[in-house]
Structure formats: C-alpha cells, structure tokens
Length: 166
Image 1 (cartoon, rainbow, N blue to C red):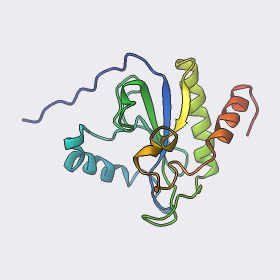
Image 2 (image 1 turned 90 degrees about the horizontal axis):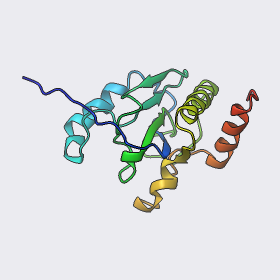
Image 3 (image 1 turned 120 degrees about the vertical axis):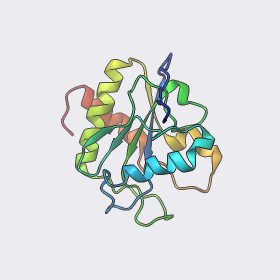
Image 4 (image 1 turned 180 degrees about the vertical axis):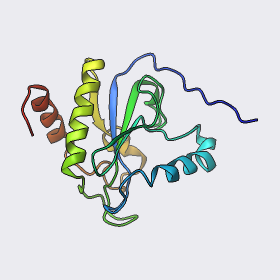
C-alpha cells in the first residue's frame, strides 16, 4: 500500500525564488519533469523531498507547469522553503556542468512575467529573488542560478505591472 503525500500549507509568503534547471536549450521541459520526480524519489527523500520541489516550472515554449499548490511548502531552497514559492525556468546552460547562460525563450519570459505578476497580486509585498541571491554562500564557484540579471527582471516586472508590454 502506498502512502498518500500531503504537503503542508505555508503560514506566510515572503519570497518568490527563481531557479533554472541547469539544462541545455534542447531540453524542452515536459520530458524532463519525470527525471526530476525520479531524482526526488530516489535521492531526495533523504533531504525531505517528496516530489518536485518547485511550485512552478516554465517550459521552453512558455507552458507553466504547476508542480504543487502555491499555498503549499516547497522543497527548492533550504532555509527559506517555509516562506517562499519556487519557480524554475527550463534551460540555463549550453552544456551539462557548463557555465550559466541566459538562453531562455521570449515565450518563457512572457509567461514568467505573467506568473510573477499574478503571484505579487495574490501575495502583496512578496519579494523576488534569484536562487543565487539567497544561497550564493553554499557554493561561490557555481554559476548564478538563474543566469539572468535579477535587477533588470525586477524592473521589467514593475513595468509589466503598470501595463507596459515588454
């Protein structure tokens, strides 16, 4: 008999943490989700992962995949999971183990802005941070996650919220 997985609700939401999947541009997203689920099951259980730790994955074509309810506690950024929502962009590398590279598609960017705007509407005052901005201390040699200009993204999000089309 298999156990039913039940995620607990967050009591507060202070952050949205943006990640990248560290995958090449030829990884579209949907086909890679089972790999993440298998990794979480076989290796992640010892770290408390019951499934994909992100709340949302944004695939290369802009499709937003909800991995767990946004009100639930995630497993994406140790130390801040109890107060954050995790969003992951598929891509971010040209080769496995390579340097981070901003290779995200225009469709991903539009979906990201739309999702972030919706989350800021539901959770007023929530802050947007890149994974590396929160946990760079864990491995200072690692490429930024995600490999994008987070200050520029925050500016774009503010413009998007004002109705500007980007």
